[in-house]
Amino acid sequence: MPTYERALTAGEQREFNQYAVIGNQMIGGERDASPMRIVTTLQAFVEKHQRQQESQWSLRREGVERPSHTGAARALATVWGDQLVRVFGWEWICLMFEGEEHFVVVQPDRSLAVFAAEYVEACLNLEMGCAIRPAFDQLRANAFPAQAPLSYVSVMQWVSSPCNELAPSQAVPPKRWAADRLKAIIRNLGASGPSSEAACEATEQGFGTPTLAT
Image (cartoon, rainbow, N blue to C red):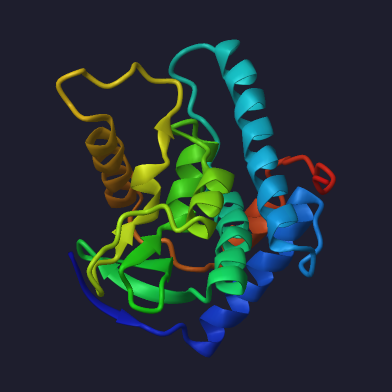
């Protein structure tokens, strides 16, 4: 469970603004486009990356280290989180979770949260199937079960699906398995604060720039 939260500092907010610019450039979007167009394009961008990675890594020998996607994930996650802020009135905060600080976007009452950077990085690393657009649609439909205030429950445990892995055991409920998987990813990735170096890294990783979805 989280032990505390704090607001973003002025410096961190500037870093997030930089990430938003980079993220929108990566997906070929405009920051003032409609949230639905941005989220749809973001979903398509990540899925395209996953298909390319699957193809590339199926041809590489075992033992070759995959490139880091941390900077790209933070840029794309900022674009995603900003749409939750625009549409649903959520806000970015710094949250202490299992001994690490995480920059997450949360509901005003802190009942639900999105660990956006960790989730997007897991998608780029082919550890999770991408469900950014489905999550957005379900939030609009108010389809998630009610949670107690200050619970900081991860939304993505209800919409995430594994990528490139065997299906979970029949003995483990799928939603529980997805929740445990996401929690493990968050724990393993550690703190995901903004970083100018990571922002530069995002621009050097060879990501394509698809046009906005219509």
